[in-house]
Structures are given as structure tokens and as C-alpha cells.
Image (tube, rainbow over all chains, first blue to last red; front, top):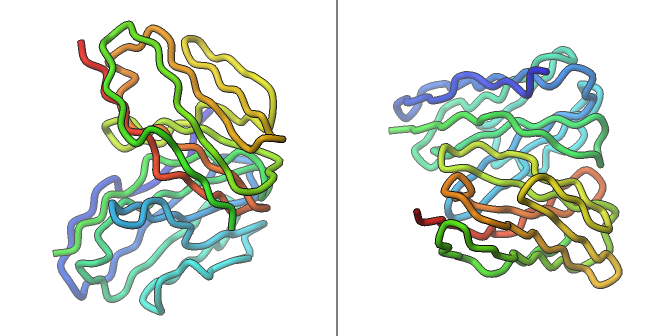
Length: 113
Length: 107
């Protein structure tokens, strides 16, 4: 069974550039989550999708962040323009339904110079 | 949201030792998850344990929902057990994570 797949695993970019992170959830899972992990704030939920529909985006820090889920097997998190304070590890997770066990991908370590 | 507190914040163990990690949560929950974040940053599911006790190899977990706490036991610790252990309690779909317990197992 393939777990949650994320790409890229590492991304180094310069301030002002657009960054796109990708996620493929576990097949059959209807819920998808994007998290950000930093030393200062720990793990924060950015956005939650259920059946490809964004349900809760209250954690998205600002308009520079956007997320889409065009189909059940793919989601993107985009940052445009990126800033050094966006440097963090971004995790995607999926679950069968909203309150069920969440399975995390390996994460994308983003560094914005 | 639900407040989750973990203790101790740091734990240093000699290989082969046993240990107990604790997770307290502020409200009734219908689920509790334990994760291990290894030194490479991967978050690995350990247990989904709303109540009772579960065992997986050298690890076991007990949740006492009525008293709002969960315990994670590591027996005969190995260096591969090093990392950060998180517990997380859901409020509907939203997981509230504790700050984690950093475990270092020395050979």
C-alpha cells in the first residue's frame, strides 16, 4: 500500500518566487489535510478538504497561500510570492473521513532564502 | 480547541531501559493518536486509541478517556526509538497536537 506521497521532498527558493507543493492522498481516503511544522509554532493545520471541497481554510496564513484539490488523488499548496518566514516543513495527510486516523506524508522541507 | 499537554518534554534513556510518556487533554475526546517523528522528520502513526490498551511490539498505549489522559510505554528501548513522540486529540476533523516528548536513546 502506497502511503501519502508528497513532492518535492526538499525545495530551496528565493524570496518572491512561486512555490508549489504536491500531494497524492491514500486511495479511498476522502479527507485531505495540509499542515505546516515550525519550531516556534509546532504543527498547524492550514486547510482541510473533504471530498475535494475545502471545508476549513482558517489556518491559511494569508492570501499568498492557496490550495486546490482538483480530484480525489491530487492536491497542491501554492505560495506566491514566497517569503523567508514561510520556511518550514509542510505535511499533507489523509484519512478515510474527517475524524478518522490521519496518515501523514513524508513532508516537504521548504527553505526560502 | 482541545488543549493537549505532554510530559516530560525531554527524555534521555540508556538502550534497554523502559519509559512512560504522558499525554493529558482538556476535554472529552472520541479518539487519540500517538505519532513518532523520527530524526528524518517523518511522522509515523503509532496508535489510534480512543480508550483501553493497545500493544505493538515493544510499544503499548493506554487511554483513560474518563480521566483525560493517555500513556505511551516504550519497553527495552533501542536507538531507533529516538525522535519526538506526539499525541494528538481531535475535535471533529481538527487534530490538536501536544508539544511532543523528545526521546534520545543512547547506545
